[in-house]
Image (cartoon, rainbow, N blue to C red; front, side, top):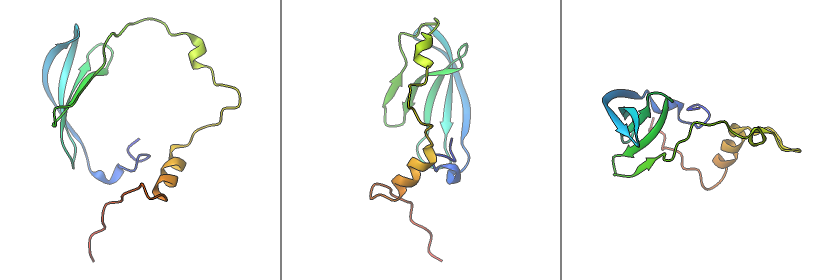
Length: 110
């Protein structure tokens, strides 16, 4: 996914376990995620579901998953609609790169 999103050349990430904590009644393992570039953040991963329940950035913004229920999903939710086409994220990214929206990092001087 990092390659598809154009982030593969951003270096390696590191995750360090921080603590076992309870989030919304679920036991989580908190991890300090440290990218090669940019700000680090903390993620709380549900130990049973292996899914992030909370993410907190260095600027204090918090995203939390709440009201989690373990139950079967309606199979109709997974049916492919008639006339649907396969989506290729690489094509979308290439279109965006050709627009005035894309901001590429400056290349180092020779």
